[in-house]
Length: 105
Image 1: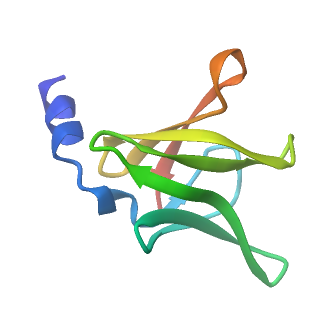
Image 2: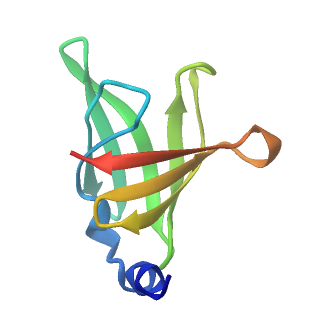
């Protein structure tokens, strides 16, 4: 538990940079810093689809928006780093929120 607390306290804002996958999709999302924010894109129909956008670092978590395919809209998102290769994304808010564990590829 102490190791996890130290990881969260020492996580750098660029710890998200790289390729990640959610468990329920056969897709690789590339997270990169764009200006002062981070975004995640995935290949789609010969181009790129923005999956995560407007992510900002608050010292503990990244906050922004994630594409919700069922809703066909962006919803609020919070990302919490669990380990160097795992993060938990909470999509939505309140009773309609959902947590998904993503893994580094």
